Image 1 (spheres, helix red, strand yellow):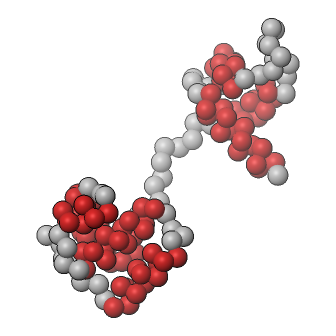
Image 2 (tube, helix red, strand yellow):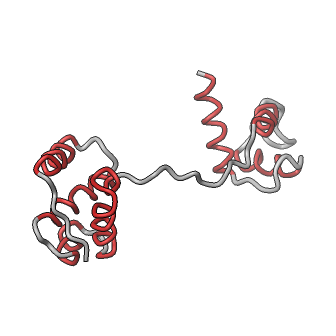
Image 3 (cartoon, one colour):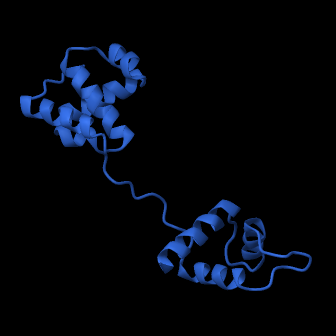
Length: 143
């Protein structure tokens, strides 16, 4: 069992943190867990009070004891899988979207664009939602 004993400054910092409410929901939940743990509440009580699993409460206690307040509140950035979409594919999508749509169609749809990218062997596979995200990203980058 990991015991959380917050310093007065940490308690004040967490209270301010919660009042501001401008952080991620995950970080705010972690702050609530730490404050309740500091009140000698067990993981089951904490889980019931803020609607998280008991293991979440245990894990946040452990993170605090091992690495301190910042470590308990925030996780390291995750690298994630490298993007399969590079500038070449974005350029192909842009060119494709600017061409005439297939016969019998008045405009390109996201699914048609995705299917055509696969036909052109630009990608092995791509979903219409990925095409949408790409187009949106390219539009916002354009300014």
